[in-house]
Length: 182
Image (tube, rainbow, N blue to C red):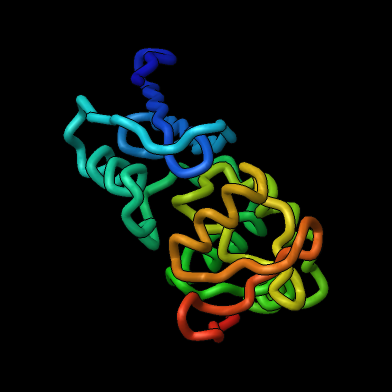
């Protein structure tokens, strides 16, 4: 579904995995990605725009591995947010990092909670893969679209999720019993 927001903005919504994805962009820059839960999965989506961005988003929304980077509009982000999200964008598919490891990687070793707040307000989930950041002991913690989204995305990348409710964590890569954190 395509929605005209103003003369320069476009939004598209589709169903994917455990919910819906709405992508908004201005010209060729993504301005926001919103994830919402829904009771069904799968979608039918055909873009009308044939820009490189639309083709990349279509592949992501069709379930292909999320590209490491897409051109996003980071102009409204603070320098700290840019550092955190920039490093997060470099976490490759199939790898995870803890909040503390990410804080150390951006030069703020005591800022794990601040890193968590940046990721909780990540305007570009899927494009900047904040689902690859987990709590200590590989615990699954909050995710802007809900933990069902985080589990879906990590399982899509080969991770096994074990445990119940608040104790859910990554057990390792499916079929290997191990995985690499950080």
